[in-house]
Amino acid sequence: MDTSTSLDFTHVAPYQQRRFVAPQTDLTVLKQVRPLFQALLEREIDSANALQNWLLERSELESALSQTGTILYIRMTCQTDDPARARAYQHFIETIRPVVKISEDQLNKKYLTEQSRWRLDPERYGIYARALRTDIELFREENVVLETEVDLRTQEYQTITGAMTVVFEGKERTLPEMGKFLHEPGRDLRERAWRSAARRRLDDKDALEQLFDRLISLRVRIAENAGFSNFCDYKFRALHRFDYTPQDCKQYHASIEKFIVPLWQKVLERRREQMKLKKLRPWDTTVDSLGRPPLRPFTKVNELTDGCVKIFNRLDSVLGRQFTEMVSAGLLDLESRKGKAPGGYQSTLDEARKPFIFMNAVGVDDDLRTLLHEAGHAFHALACADDSLLDYRHGPMEFNEVASMGMELLADPQINVFYKPQDEQRSRNEHWEGIISTLVWVAVIDAFQHWIYEHPAHNGAERKAAWLAIHERFGGNFIDWEDLDEEHAFLWHRQLHIFEVPFYYIEYGIAQLGALQLWSNARKHPQTALANYKKALAIGGSRPLPELFETAGIKFDFSTKTIAPLVEVMKQQTGL
Image (cartoon, rainbow, N blue to C red; front, top):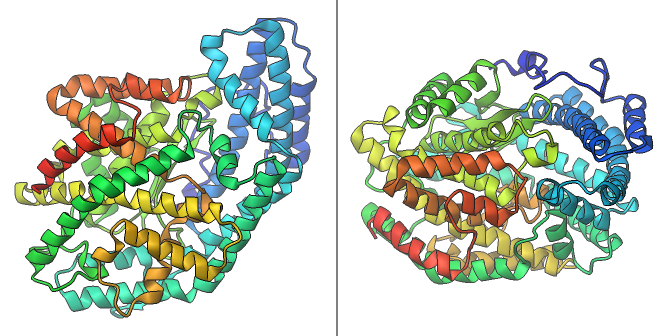
């Protein structure tokens, strides 16, 4: 995909013609944005029908603004070393987003006042009103400037990490590209690759530490301004976590420590024995433990997309058609390259109601799993695209991740598109071991984030000690970190969620448990499980979180009661 020409998205048509925002409006120009909010704020509402129409116009404006910001973000992350893209995104953050936040608070208050007069259907609008009441409760105008700085600081993280490259084996390579070498049988090659990438990260450790200190300071001030004694409680409200608490997250940590960490230890011990090593080192955890060449599901990105088209067509003709249309419309940027931000994501163009997938594919098995994951998010966006309310076209994050992790497992029986039988089973085994690793890593990252904001005045040395203690609690000492003290201490720097979206990580653990339940259902009744999955996706964010899980045929629960039986499933699938 030629990102220099196709990422303006002018070829992607709006879902429907605008009724309120003029087609020629430039939503990066403040003087064109302000009057639109003012018109909504001053509108006289004289009936329930008028209020519903007002909501549709508000949703249209917010969708158009969201898409404008999303396109600028996509362009920036696709080429973080392009100053023009960085400036355009920064301008939107500094100029447009603060005014939008203030205006949306005013509109929230207007809606709740009018809704009390005209009594809209609580079954339809109850979830929407609950979210608005929470947002009003939290909003403080003095926080807008602080939130703007947070946004700009997180852009710095993208810029710093996107610029990380190393010269290895005679060629300049991105850090995602360096990950390919960790699958190679030669242990010396793996070690040199791992150390090269780790040293490159350490080159920027001081800059990242200073950046994170500033982010903590800003977030704590935001919480205090909103009347909260700590950032954790504030953030749980801001994330609309109505159905679980920080204490529930700590219960997840304890359950993982009790049930999953011992399983993870068995996975690693088996690996050590198969590799005939005295100790496992960080560069020994992803290579094939029997010394076989790395899995190469594809060599070119178009082979990855073509294969996934086949997988989705086998699974469901509608999903196959939707993914084909995404490919044809250029709604994917998958290949790793210099200057591209790390990681992967799916983001929705809210006015077109179309998904976009961003990745750093380098030709390894993880890339296949990542695209299946992000495609699950894309199918979720498409499933609820017909809802007239923007808020309902985005589900709660805990279920959004069921959509993605569930798709990884639902599509798993079809990966023979990429592999011969023996390699297919290898890929499947690696995936199941990865599920165990994910459940543990979620506990590590979430517990670390809780510690950070429970001790906001900590210094760098204390943070380092806390990280090492938490990592060891969840099995970090199963790997030998001898002579890698700094690399180990700053391992968390590679986890962008800690920098960019604080407390967004427990969702992966909650969702993984839901996806495992979905997989268990699919083994018995595949068509019913898929139908329930699609039905739940179509609800979007219009119903409470537990109801979304129930519609999918699974339980919203991440206590010992749910985790313990799933341990047996994981043991069976990994042969432990």
